[in-house]
Structure formats: structure tokens, C-alpha cells
Length: 92
Image 1 (cartoon, rainbow, N blue to C red):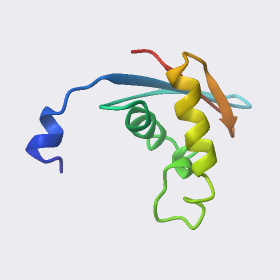
Image 2 (image 1 turned 90 degrees about the vertical axis):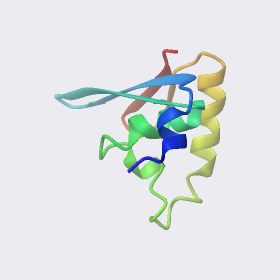
Image 3 (image 1 turned 90 degrees about the horizontal axis):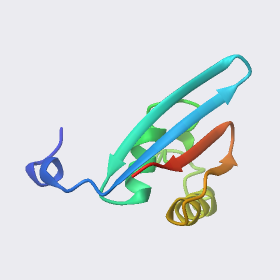
Image 4 (image 1 turned 30 degrees about the horizontal axis):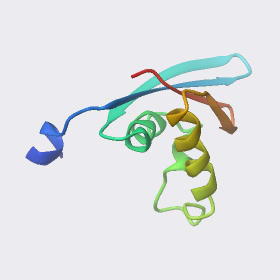
């Protein structure tokens, strides 16, 4: 459940995630106060990308470089394609 502060936090970023693997294709959207927060909101909707932000996984710290690359790409208006079958792009 979101706190009142979280519910009223301004949305400054919207990220679109496209997952394409074989015949499977899906789009997910996330928003948040930062690019990383918006990307995480999109990623947790799909098992193909949820591992990028899974804090309970032993791989969370190992994937810090992927998250840093994701932020850099999105901040520069690029599509990030370096994590599995996922394409992340900032749309707002």
C-alpha cells in the first residue's frame, strides 16, 4: 500500500518496456519521480524483466551495472536493450 507521500509524489518520468521473445510480445508502462523508478515500475510487471530490480535476489548487486546503463540510456533519449529481451524507452 502506498503512503500518502508516495501517492502524491509528482510523476516526472514515464518508461515504456517492450518485451519481445519469439512469438511473445508485450508492452508495459511505468511512471515515477525518476527514470529509474519509472523503469522499475514497468519492469516488475513482467517476469522477463523483473530480475533487474528484484532486491530479494542474490543477483541484485550484480545487476547494478545494467541499472546504471539503463539510467544513462534513458536520460539521453536512447532505447536500452542490454537486459534480456527487453527494450526500455523513456516516453515522458
